[in-house]
Image (cartoon, rainbow, N blue to C red):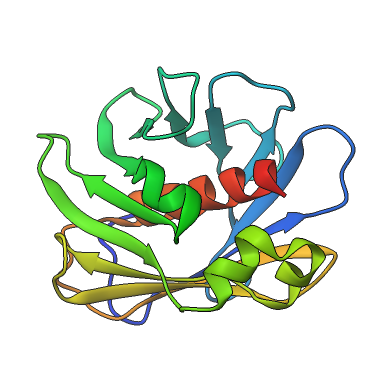
Length: 197
């Protein structure tokens, strides 16, 4: 079972870009072992993402879902297979639509514990308005404690036109976030990015 996020932890989310209906992705640990697998359905009005421990889909790792249909400002919940709330993530609506992506992360008691912010001045603009030129500007995010606290982790997209690949590097081991929260966050960002691409 996954535990607390620790300094030096690394994960990679890998998703094929050229798929006809839906998408599938893998979550790998630092040694390249599959620790998560998801087959995302196409044409869903509400996100309901289930991540399993491997490609057999025999054991569920976590579930992400939202009650809302409209994405702008929707809150996405990360649950254990037993239904316990791990955390929730809410995109900053207008800012994320026009400037750069920003997500607020809340604990089960609804207190904000972290913020995930897209980095860069030019890249976010080009990604939104540059058409195919956006492919050469990979995304990079910083996950900070609270609203503007200590830098906890970095999410970084690796440039590859055929495979969406995002790495997660944990920089601090005193984070209130656990591994399920981090995997849920990077999976949600990949799912939203995949739908917008």
